[in-house]
Image 1 (tube, rainbow, N blue to C red):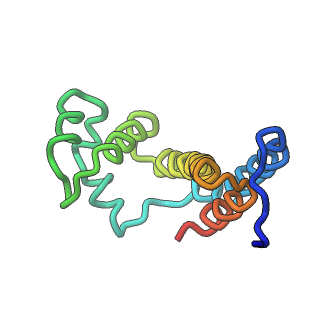
Image 2: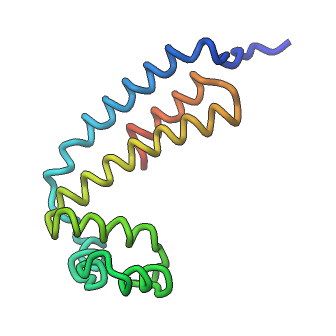
Image 3: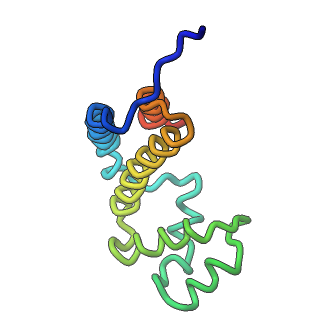
Length: 138
C-alpha cells in the first residue's frame, strides 16, 4: 500500500482554483516592476532595437518574413509576431514589451497547472510545480 495523496476530485476544485488565483496575483506582483526596466542589451538590441522587420509593425511583408526567414540565426515566428504587436502598441518603449512578457508568464502558469492536473489528476502537486516555475522560472 502506497502513501499517495488522492487526486483532486472535480467537486473539490474550488480551493486549488483559489490558490492558483493567489499564485497568479503573487507572481504578477513580483514581476510587475519589470515594466520599468530598460531593454536588456544581450539580445534585445539585435531582436528589437535593430530589427527593422519588427519596427515595420504588422504588415503582410513582415508577417511573411517572420514565418519564412530566420533572423539572427533563429526561426521563431511567434516571438517575432509578439514583438511586432508590442511595437505597434508601444513603439520602442520597453515597458510594453516587458508587460507582454509578464502577462505571458501568467498565462504559462495557468497552462502548466492545467496540463499537469490533466496528466496526473493531482491538483496540489500541480500547483506546487507551477509555483516553483512561476516564482523562479530559471
